[in-house]
Structure formats: C-alpha cells, structure tokens
Amino acid sequence: MNGMTNLVMLLIAMHGGSEPPAPALRYTVASQAVNRRSPIKMDAVICKDGQVHTFPAGHPKPCI
Image 1 (cartoon, rainbow, N blue to C red):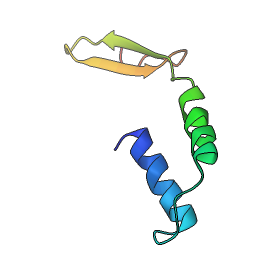
Image 2: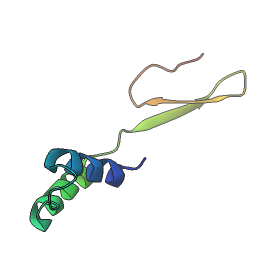
Image 3: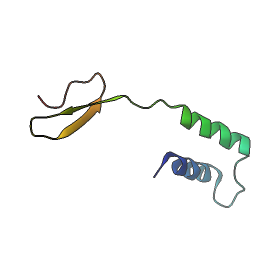
C-alpha cells in the first residue's frame, strides 16, 4: 500500500466509517506532513557473490 492509502485509512479510523469525512483543511495539513518527510539515504554495494545489497548511508557494508 502506498502512503496516501495509509493516510486515508488512518483518517477513516480516526473519524469512524459512518461519520462525514474530515474537513479538507485538516486533510491537506496531514497530507503535507507526510510529503515533507525526507527519504532515507541509501548506499549500495555489489558483493563478491554478485548480489547487490542496499543499506542506510553511513552504516558498515553488509559484505566484504
């Protein structure tokens, strides 16, 4: 599931399925907060076995 689907499900859970949806302003603020999150920087390395491994930047390499 993508982030927008999760946000919609969270809003429904917070307000109940039978109640009217949240006001547009509150939905917009929540949506902007999700979009403002910075992505995690990742590094990648090709190991001797030929596989590509990704890991968070600044962490030790998962293989030699």
